[in-house]
Length: 267
Image 1: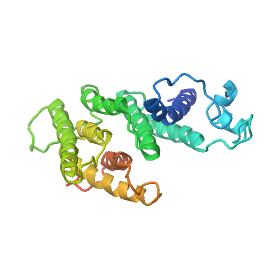
Image 2: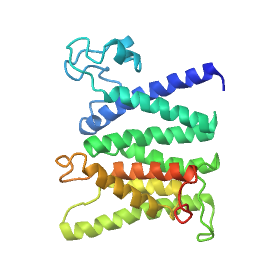
Image 3: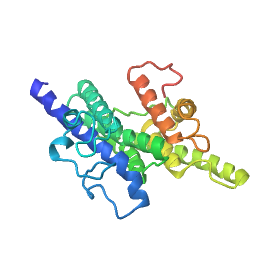
Image 4: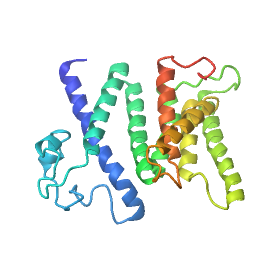
């Protein structure tokens, strides 16, 4: 791949990283106020409400031109906007290097984009967008027709097609957490696991199949416990299980791709 193609893709990933910031900030607000949307009102400073000029909306460049402060009110711009853009261009270029221009690039980056937004909204607002959860399940069901990137092994345990393995994974992942929540609700008289978390694990099951779910649940639970120590006051009453599961899924996929997992975990 040539230099200009890399530059073009870098700009694309930066733009998508900037768009992810919009989704992370606005999706929880839209959930509570249906009069809002992703387009209106136009991008503005969250402190003084002044509209941001076009040049300052450019990824990275806008932040640098303003020297990290709003040109109108002088308040500091949240550094997370810059971090999101950098994370997306790094991840996107890694996927481009590994898969070149292919279906593998499309599905891997799309999945990264969706999960990146979800991990941030869950960590900040305990919110997992329903439409994004559906996207994860769609990747599991659709990608098997275009690529072997998420090929599901069953080692003869479940004799079936890839589509059926994906369906079994969704079914078991969804109803496993659903059943646990039902038991918790019978005892505590309230939900212990959010519907978004339940659908999220079902989506992961559609991608990795039923036999890899225990590994993701184990790793994800450990991540959730770790996250809870980052802000004990914030997570005193509720834990971001979705964020932990997403990190567990990422780590599992990375280790699986580079064949770093023990054989008994790679299913």
